[in-house]
Amino acid sequence: MRRNCTKINNYEQQSQMLMERFIEKGYQEEPLRQEIERIKHINRDFLVRDNQRTQGNRQYEFAVCLDYNTQHKDVDNIIRRYWGLLCNDPVKTKIPLHPKFIYKKANNLQMSLVKKCISEAPMHHYLRKITFSFDSNEPVPFFNEHGEFASPSKVTNWVLHEDQSLTFRDVGTFTAWASEDQQLQINTSLITWKRGDKVPVSRCSVPCLPGSRKIPGSSIHKCCYGCTPCAEGEISNTTDSENCMKCPDEEWPNEEKDRCLPKLEEFLSYTNDSITAVFSSLSIHGFVLTGFIFGIFIYHRDTPIVKANNRNLSYVLLVSIMLCFLCVFFFLGPPVDVTCRLRVTSFGIIFSVAVSSLLAKTVMVFIAFNASKPGNSWKKWMGYKLSNCIMLVCSSVQVIICVTWVSISPPFQERDTRSYQAKIILQCNEGSALGFFSVLGYMGILAAVSFITAFLARTLPDSFNEAKYITFSMLVFCSVWIAMIPAYLSTKGKYMVAVQVFAIMASSTGLIGCIFFQKCYIILLKPDHNTKTHLLGSKIKL
Image 1 (cartoon, one colour):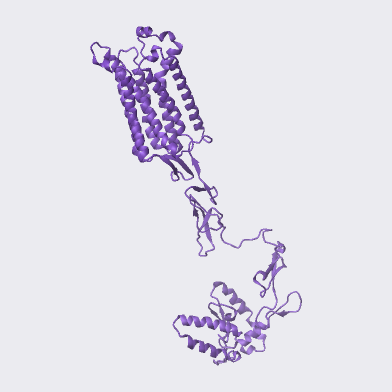
Image 2: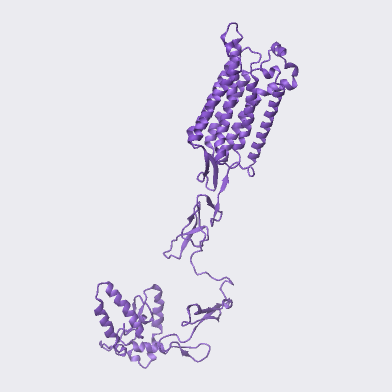
């Protein structure tokens, strides 16, 4: 090491590194340090003195140490071809006829040329004599006395023309002793590229743009790779990204997959969904129509057709249907906790009141028919008290179910981020599935009892018997809600809410159409039929 290092500070640095390696292997530090100090004071000229070995006719070997690489075969050929130039030196008697090559890992220039049987001094002598002509015609030394570059290197642009002629143009310089940012100076405007003005790219892979990530290629080199788009829900916002990043639950990648955007919120919007405008318009028209019928019944309250079958129950039924049309608006717009609690409970209680009124009407038809028989005890049940009691009791059960449900596990707003990838569903969570289906189940029981009762009473010989109209209305009501259940369970998001709204409006329209349209026809267009004598005489059944 002392022989190879021309400067003492290089020897100290290299010997310190070598000593640390020996210490790591378990050697003691003090003997190593003493040996380093001893060799440090030896004269280097003595170490580089010729070591001669006589072998037969006094042949010498010269070893050239190179990194092991298949490309260095070209270096071998160049050295062998121009080896004869060294024979022109006065010390040619020490130069062998052929060089010997040794392949090993070389760390620097000092280790690239290794002396084996002859001194390094002659080789250093040849290197110091290398000259090169720059701007001037006079050759100048390539190295100074310390073995360093004496002049800056030029960067030359070789231009191959179509006629296969070459021209050379200096486009920059490289100064080894300058600061790192000033070493290489190139004027890119002077460069002539092979493909016009397009600068060639020195890489074997196309850069992976944002929105994709790198994948290992077929080459063993790390710089050669492939690109693949990020998976669904992931992005990459840098070039040549190793991995893609997953977007938060409430965000989703854009089309380029280079940034996350807030997911679209889905609900029955007043501004973006035309079906919401349709539902709103139909609900308002239904409410106005029902209010118009209610006004007609109030104005003609003393006429026989209005007084038949308990006009108070008709008033309650009409008000209930009006409220059913209005409760549709609880389902439209973005859901919040308050509207979620009022959705099912409101239409559940209101429909229970309406169906209870129809049940009370049908029961009163039975009682009226039986009370008309001589000596029958059903007469004591005639009057408003029984009908009102039936309506209140049946409605109270639904009120108790709804209050219990809201008190124990009330519905609430929910943001569903998993059903769809690119949007969030704003919906109402029932809180308790038992409470939700209990409300619907009780309403179905009331409708079934009313349907069966009205069906049995439809043929009773009563002039004011409207049981057959109640039968048709309950048939429509039950058909709508039975068809709603599978549609409700098979849809999600705003379409599930639309199914509920449609069921409410269809059943409300069925009730008012089957029960009140015939009566309004007689009141408005056939007023001569709206008399007790005419009804009893013609047996018009309502």
